[in-house]
Amino acid sequence: MIFKIVFNYFRILIVCSIIAINSAFANPDSLLTIPHVLPKLKNSFIERAEKGEAPSGFKIRGMKGWSWTPEQYLAEIPILAKYKMNFLMNCYLSMFSQPLMANSDVKVKNEWWLPIPESKKRIYEKIFKECRDRGINFCFALNPQLFSTRPLDPTSNKDFEDIYKHYEWAQQNGVRWFSVSLDDVSGVKISGEEHVQFVNKVIQRLRLKDPGAQMVFCPTFYWGNGKSSETEITYLTSVAKDLDPSVYLFWTGAYDNQNFSLKDAIAYTAMVKHKVIYWENYPVNDGTPTLHLAPIHSRDKDLCNALDGYMVNPFFRENEINRIPLFTAADYTYAPKEYVPSSSISQAIIHQTDNKEQQKVLLQLVELYSSKILEGGVGFNPVINRFNQIIGNSYSEHFADEYLLYVKKVRNNLQKQFPKQYMQTKKTIDKNIKTMEDSYLKRYGVQFLK
Image (tube, rainbow, N blue to C red; front, side):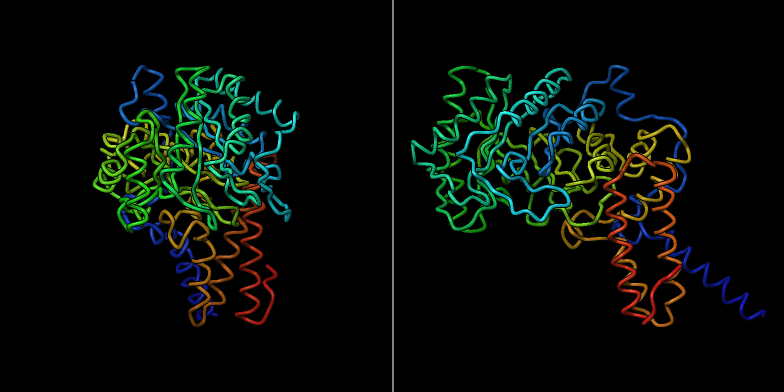
């Protein structure tokens, strides 16, 4: 009996330690440890802004969707305004004739040459207006080559007219920011000279109606220092030389998106010779069943001196829980020199709800799903990774029991405290629990039934 009591004591002690160090284990910097006690008062960049403090960071601060539905955009516009952000771009997947949708196996279709259905136009016109009413610049974006059976030919006058009608419609409905994206494609001719001529043609025609129209171009080579190959150098040299000097470029950082520096940003902007908006590839999960809830970190406090804007890439389905890491991005972009990741994530949590029990559950969730930015790619899952480490050890069944029970407890607490919120987040956690239960059966030869 004594042996059993001692054994259970140490078992619980070890498992609690595993849970307690989960976020610290996943993060490389001890300063990023998720605090176990939340602050009592809201005291963030939002409160400072409301007292009159002007932003000292990036001029352009915002987000794009990730194949979001119109309803998701409408739900998040008030959040962007609350977070003092001023830029929202639609994901070009959202504008596909058959978008990638949550809980659907239907193949996407990018028939960019077809008219946008009237019903879709009407709801996007509401999105445009909601952004205007809240002081947010909506950026209308298209990628006419990605997943398309008829990739746009940038030298074709017919293709130009077929796609321009969409930009014209957006402009007629008050949109003043636009994006041409020619990234992430294969099997098409890549010519910097042709891309530049096409983008210039679009913005020049838009400015016939609105001299203040703005354009952001996502080039085919949108990462690194712009000098990794002769093809890249040739392409970006054309961009630097001939692209309308007022056009912005998107850039996603160095090859290692986690650890790029101010030096990397300066090198890329020097190469392209245009104003640049950093496209933060976080906390995006590309539709995989995982979450990334750690605060933005490893970003230079002087990055805003080299770049004009900062746009984050969000979750696919889980736009509600996306508001937590988004808060930290908004915090950083508003005042980079004052940004502290550990305090920012605390403030992010307490700004979601004034209910202390609800805050506690969100903290537990953040602890579970905190990891290095892009550790193992956007599909990296800190919960499953930690579970796999546990079951990889000898005599680990009891520890696996406790960890799985804890994850289920957090999931149940989330349902209890937020019965009508975070529905997609709950589905993601359920998928993770199912994956762990399957691994449990394979590892131990019995089903997890607790």
